[in-house]
Length: 328
Ligand code: NDP
Image (cartoon, rainbow, N blue to C red; front, side):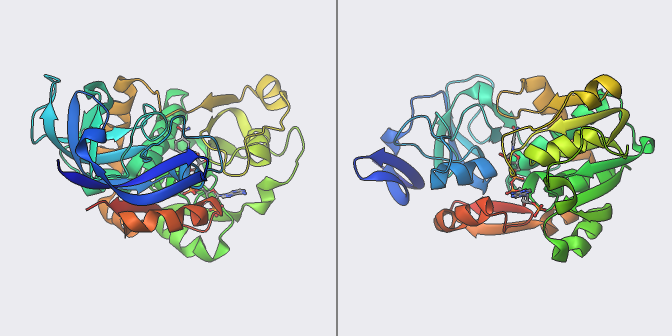
């Protein structure tokens, strides 16, 4: 029986812990498609799972990792053949089903997408669930009619994974992007990614008024809490706020004023159970409009064994851009 390297999260009498380990292949779940994983990534949710800070993990023991890219090695699903290059985001993988922080995975064929022709497996994981979520936010703005000429788009948590790819994508699409960050020393980096202006997140993160001066045509919010409330309060008449994250908090201390007095739309973004047609649309948007050189410049590559040490730093908001993991 061959073995593979993986991160394994356990919870028992000895407590909650994540460890780097070696597992026998027959421990993988009995699903239709076996994948030799090439790359995975560190997402905020993975950091929550690894540290146990939030109840992300639904079953123990569990291999975390909400995304991966690799090569099909066995398939009982006619949609996939041995050798196909595939990627996966979400579907409860890394939460209730064994995930991508391992050299092998077994998943349902319905959860897999082909790696777009213009990307390598490493590229799609440099983008990862964070970047695909950023694309879902951009599609959300477009669906609600926010066009490049309409005015400024606020991106919060701009130096993070979702935020940095949102800045890159929106700027490449011709939007004027204002990046909100707690890392003022990264202002030049954010400007290079495409931000027209960089603002201090402290201007948004404290309790604010129900309505503030109208500024944003659209918002990509990755942090929630007072920041999201203030973003809604300062969105222009008819604008759209896409909400995908909770890095500041899960609460939303807001009033209905922006919605009933300014017709602002609050659009929720979920990447995990997002239907397949919209996933395909998001990956097409990324394939067409994400500059690969800029993507590589915001990506840091690490080894599988380093992920446990890095997870607390992510939750502390100390990392920037995307962390891609070479699991081999
Ligand atoms: P990162 O850790 O890469 O980025 C989060 C960023 O938020 C940080 O870099 C920091 O940016 C900012 N931040 C951190 N702490 C605080 C705080 N206390 N107050 C205000 N801002 C803070 O995470 P990701 O980009 O991968 O994910 C961002 C969020 O989106 C997470 O909450 C994650 O769970 C969520 N998410 C949701 C998905 C969905 O399906 N809805 C899918 C993917 C992610 P800066 O220093 O620039 O301010």
